[in-house]
Length: 321
Image (cartoon, rainbow, N blue to C red; front, side, top):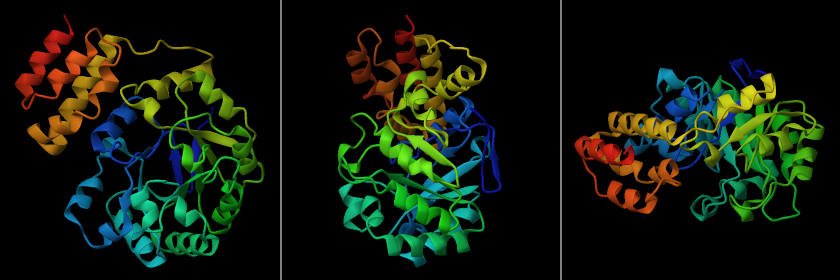
């Protein structure tokens, strides 16, 4: 593995944290950066909401110096709002603006964005060219190989992207219809990489050394992007770097390690959202940390009732017994 350059942005490595809606908020991004991620992405943000200065959206655009370099992912279906949003994203402190062309969520596709937008090559071209001209920072895209199994639109989009001035393409190597399940289509991913003149990053089902290696064997693959496999498992970035560069297989985080990651996540979440909301937000993350603990279901149920830091500290004492 090697360092990666996206436009003028130089990364310390080519192992990236994927953008995940409702997941990659500031606290999680900070932890991923501490775990060794070369680049972290915000969760997907509506271009129109950014342009309309939506208050909730402003929170999503908050960036910490600790997590830099950072990419902000936007979605939308018209060139004007995407370009205007890219300017605001740039001014918010983002190092890279990323365009979502792969989200299969009904709410997104109904608005003509995400994977739905990928089917309209002329509109994709217009949006990419307009955003690149407006952003003044590197622009990347994240795509799926297609909508249904057997379909591969990734190669065509990669060609459009590099002709439009896009600096990097991340390819989720599963069709949108599969969501986050099933094996990635390495053959279609290879096709997308074969003629690429810009970095192509692999995404989809990467959880360990073996799943990462299957992508890195593909010619022209420039790096990997990890999604759900990194939640509560932030040292995966450092472990993979050591494995591929030093032929050293570091141990998986112990329960003690994960408990410490959990404590840091809770503290960062409360600092970002406030005490009560910070703990409420953590409910969707908690199971990643304790999934194989003794009485994990009981511990999760207890966590879902706590509302103060004092309650959390009390629960932590029980976990560490």
